[in-house]
Length: 422
Image (cartoon, rainbow, N blue to C red; front, top):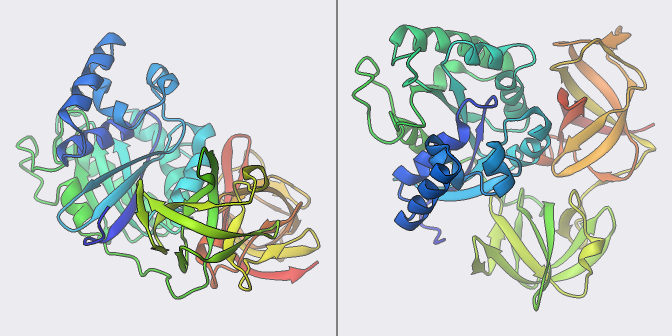
């Protein structure tokens, strides 16, 4: 991919069945990112599975298992371009137990499209206390996705029938929610759209004459390029590692900060394994140098892929990523999003930070609190149960954000303010 236009990573988020994959698939078709042959294959497949309306979703839901069940399991990467940008689209799954994937995906996103169904009942279940519209919005904000566009979807549904009143009702509720999460609703485009029919995705729709704002792609074109952290030390959280015949070991991840060049000596933490970078690729194209914001694979020789794990963080030798051990505490600014009762000291759930997952113990709650329940916030001391790479949020933001998960749900989100001895 030539680098004339800036490159942004976008994530598609929202409650299950609100139309994320269909919307994204249709955007890819309208943006010219899908060949006629692919489109014909998908139409054939959709009609064979007796679900013709799902054809657009199939570009994003590429696993057969997902096609049959109609849900997006692993993060799918697709790219397209607008007038101003190249976008890599990360389609975030909408089922509750897939939020783990969303967490690692969102930590790589510069911007988001929040897809919200305007259908009666669907909209309300998404913004309920346990709905994923609420959960995903909280997560996106915590994970550093500061720019979003909201797609008010399913305007074509017979119940909604392109109603301006229903659109206004939905937008008013969403503005309240997004404000509570920490977004500034006045800076957000709320686009009435249909992922299935294509209304207001690229072209203005005749079905919404009352709407004079941007289409989804026009709103995407108004995103700003986040300041790239190229001058900081190198940090690449490992998302995956492949063993490729004839090439050796290929770790994959997003360069969060700094630059990586062919020939660099790198170290994988917390293990301390070192290696030399033989080659770098982005979207199957070789590059000499990668920088903050690039999703890359890089080839190293002499290191067995078994010794590198998802959740490791890559840095340059001599400027190693910070590792915390169980004798340290993370002073973390936390907000509780959801819990069936309340959480107290010694609660030890799985915590996700960058691409790592590690159990952490709530060692100390905010002053004056014996327990924390939904919407409570404050400074919590978290003790990691094993070695993991963590940085202070102010030093390396992507490595200082975390999400606490339990019972298949996001319980809390937080920012690491300091690292102290226990």
